[in-house]
Length: 156
Image 1 (cartoon, helix red, strand yellow):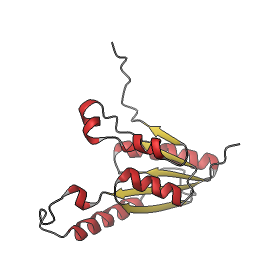
Image 2: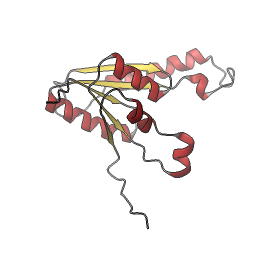
Image 3: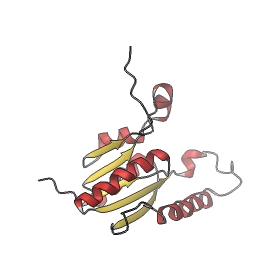
Image 4: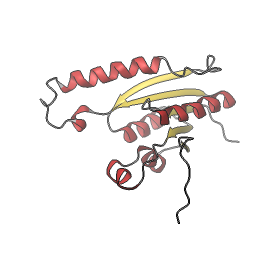
C-alpha cells in the first residue's frame, strides 16, 4: 500500500498553481497527509544580471520578494474544508525546479502536485518547463495538473 504522509504543492501564485493547490488539498484530506506549500523566489541575479540595473541592491530586491511571498503563503490554502489540514509553508531562493527538488529530498516528500502552464512551441522552448524538469528529477511521484480551461486539440 502506498503511504502518502507529506504532499508538496509548489506555487507561483498563478491560476495554474491554484488548480494544483485544489488537488493537493483534496489529496491531503484523503490521505490525512501534511501539506507543504513552497514558493521559490527567483534569484535576482538571474533576472537582472547587471547589479545596478534596478537602482536598488539585489539583496533588497530578493528580501522584498520573500516578504511578499510570505504574506501570500500565510493566507493559503483559503479553501473550504482545509481548516484542519496541517500546513507547512516555506520560501526558498534559487532556480525553481532545483529548489523544489531540494525541498522534496530534504523533507522526505511522498508526492509533489504541481501545476503546468501549458506552454507550447517557441515559448516552451525558450522558457522551459519547471513542471517537466521536476517530473524528470523528483525523488518521488509527481502529479501534474493542467488548467481546466485548456482543451486538448487533436493534431491533424
